[in-house]
Every structure is written in structure tokens, then in C-alpha cells.
Amino acid sequence: MAAVPVVSVLNMKGGVGKTTISAHLFRHMMSTLRKNILIIDFDPQFNLTQTLMTQANYQKCRDQNKTIFSVMEPPSAPSLFTISKNMGPPPPPSELTEVLYHWTDTKKTALGLIPGDFRMTKYTLVDDQKTLQPVQKRFIEFIEKAKEEYDLICIDCNPSSSFMTLCALTVSTHLLIPVRSDRYSILGLELLDEFVSGLPALINKPKNIVLINGGPGNSVDTNFESSLRANSKFGPLTLPTVLKSSTLLGAKEGKVGFATDKRLPHVNSLKRHLTTIVNELKVPLGW
View (cartoon, helix red, strand yellow):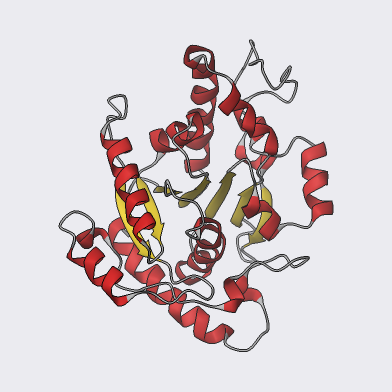
């Protein structure tokens, strides 16, 4: 049986479209390849969750302790500056997952979301790495449980070299690295590669997959693309297709949901485009 891919969407630079890709690309992968996918919002800003859930639904999840914070520590976590002493095992994924889609024939979860939580910022405030080890262990255990239920796990990460980044890297089989057509995106790519390479504790390094993101209102500079594809290290890791700009992929105030579910002009064109990228991803994912 093939290993379940755990894909962290990550770049050390912000504003490269990680949340857009985590939401819309993997939702389309679910339906196109008929894969059971779990998306984890691992960014304390929880923009992914806000993209997919109404404020009322999110507040209900938070009140019921159904967020990523309950993966890391028990709901009775003492404070923003103190780590729980008696961790215990993490809850099963089914207890925390917001089911976004299920298969009508099998009734299984087709696409699930572990909502984000601003309280995750506490892990940037605690300096003692030894104190944080049980938190990381609990997260790893949760991912192992999730692998038993899903064909792929996507982790939407924040752009930093934090404790949470280390947690994500530890469980990841692949890194999907979005880049925009500016030199700072390349710098973020290089910094991430240097950071991952320099982690001695990371025995199994995740495989890199680079995706050029045109982004809303941002056409891809041909010189940038040529330079990236000619790069001896990153060129071969870059997917052939560029994620083209689309207003359907942009977040809108008060609107939640997936781009490919919208009954709007050009949605079929977007679906065809995303299908091409999904099929290109099958190779590095081993499908």
C-alpha cells in the first residue's frame, strides 16, 4: 500500500497564494481524482478557515473546541504562556473535522477541514523547546491517525521558521511551494530549501514541488519564469503549468466557499486549468 502523502503548502515569503492553493486546488483534486482529503489550517491567522467557513459556523467550532488548537493540547490548556502538563493522546480526526463534502455512495468524508485558531500564536511565545516536545509529539500522532482515514493531508502553513513550521516539516512527505514572479519569491524558495536542508533532526526530507502562481492581477514575468525553469535545483521541481490569474480565486468580503463551486462565468475554464495542475501533481505524489 502506497504511503499517504502529507503536503505542506509553504513558502518563507508571505503573499504567494498558499491559502488559495490549499483551498481551491485540493478541493478540485478531491473531485477530479476521487481522493479523500483532509485540509489542516496551521496558520494562526486562519485565513483558510475564514475562506471556507462563515463566522457563525467557525464560532460554533471554536466553542466546541473543534479546531487545530485541540490537536496540539487538551481544551483545558492553562494559558497563552503555559503548556499543558498532562497531554494524553490527541482526539481522533473525526471529532475535530468540519466535513465540507462527503461521498454520496460511501458516506465517507471526501473533504474535511481542521479549522485554524488564533491561539496557535502561543507556540511563538514559548521559548523552551523541551516544553514543546509533547505538543509536537501529539501533532505527529494526530497526523498518523488521519493517514488511516484519508488519501492525502494538506497542511496550510504560516510563512515563518517557527515551531509550527518544524511540526509541519516533520510529518510532511512533500512541500508544495507557491512562488510569484518577483525576486523575493525566489529568495523565499532558497531560504526554505536552506532551512530544511539544515535541520539535522529531519531525517526524511520532504520532496519539493514548486508552483508558479500568477495570482489575481499579477501576470507572470517571462524573464522570471525562464530564470526559475533554468535553475538547476528548482527548475526540475517546478510544475509545467502556471496557476493563472482568476478573479474566481480571490477572496471576497462576506463570501465563503470554493471557487469551482460558484455558478459564475469562466468557472468551467478554471476547472479545466486546475485539472491540468492536479494531473501534473500526480507524478511527484506517486499516484
